[in-house]
Image (cartoon, rainbow, N blue to C red; front, side, top):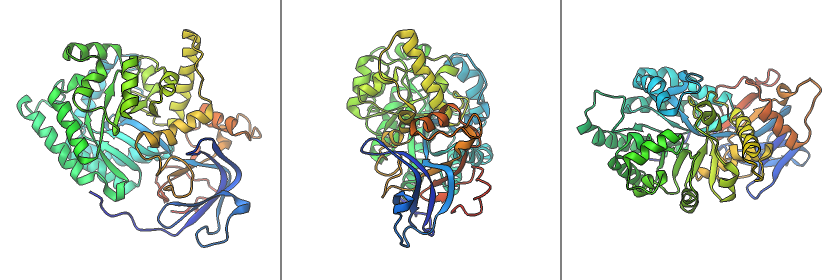
Length: 454
């Protein structure tokens, strides 16, 4: 389904400091730069303001200096119904936390609940700088339609999916005999309605929760549907040692956890595996070979005491990795916060395990949160950096809110990225666009709010 793209808007340009990873490597760092956006929502020009061409494609700029324009952040893993539970259940193991907090709240995520929560959630994501989100819903078809409608109206780029479970379920009204066929049919119907909507801004992800709650048939048939539709397929992998042990008991013939999904046809280039904390070398190599993506959720992994991903080893092997908030396992929607926790975790691994692997610097974490996330979704040519021809998914960040004292500027790009990550402020994102459309959520700079292009 392609749907109709939103109407074009007048071209506009923003004058600011520019900070972005580049597709060919390195970074764009321009102290006084301009980004020009055309009527179709694509970046028409980017570079130093002094070199800005005089043409209708790059009209007079809205000047937001000393604020910074960056690519929008990409959240590869979140749970839409769970937002009200963020911060609850610290220290519980994964399976206990699911039974105590998650299943009860997802059980009530009907159409009315989705209508109340989804618009609030998307505004909160944009306020945190997230312009693309990959999220789970609940098991109910109607609530997923409502969630997609909210994303369509808001303007965020979203990949969503109805949770699929045919064992260890929270919907007792549906019998075991009918849940498999019903879930597959409803998911296929949702995909037919929403995958590719608004020229691809909205996409569908078939969403078997994880191997603990899915039969072999559910995994196999959901993967087949995703492949046939050209859609995404998302699930959880090797998050917690207790979960891994239960999967081994349920699927004794599998070589390991990933092999459960591989035998179902679920390990392919549009698959997104959340967590992947405890992987064998065989699993790492198989993910790399398949081109499947991993959503690294360090805040959630520490909150639930699940473990610490050996990120450097995965990146060194060539794995496609982006970042995920995993709300509500992760207590914060902000990907800036996720970057900070991830950096602390990798430092701790070096201390505890004596590792000598390279550590990502602030610009490396920024790349993971933007361009690497886009590439994990197969969208690296479309979003993830401030480059001509890409769609204008971008944010304005006020670095003054990260300064320890008012005059403490961070001129070096690495220092700036570090401040944004380690001293992130909940109000520092002042604007967010997807395809050049201003999203509701961020609190604009008071001096420019009336001028920001919408």
